Length: 147
Image 1: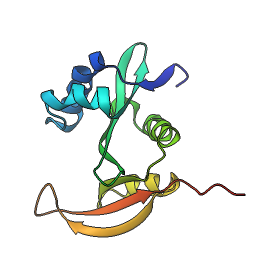
Image 2 (image 1 turned 60 degrees about the vertical axis):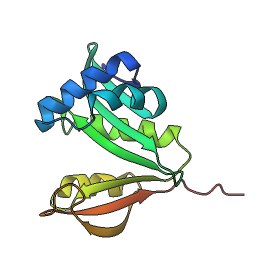
Image 3 (image 1 turned 60 degrees about the horizontal axis):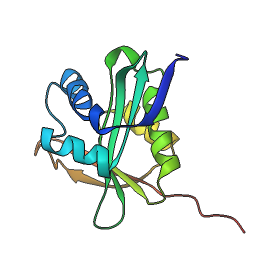
């Protein structure tokens, strides 16, 4: 898809991102109160096709100076077209801190995609969101500059 643009989200995009999340996940991932704060102070990028938001990555800096990916979503019609990968690549390009994320260990496609993007498996945890699930924590650190 040639006409997909990745850009930093504007505050005015925040409710459209929430609408996309609801359509894809059937629930709110980011609260209506936090959405505009993430867009203003966090690391939020959108993928647009013909002016419509078709994907988003929402991340913020933690107290430990890491970037935590809170949500990564792509409209079902645009999946497996590297839209999500391009969103992640933009985040990786723009941040200097390590990036961390929790991944459902049953989703092998997500696991492989993160490994391909340079993430490393850190540890397995029992569901922070649901006690009956387990997740893997992945971290991506910036490569050290060569002298």
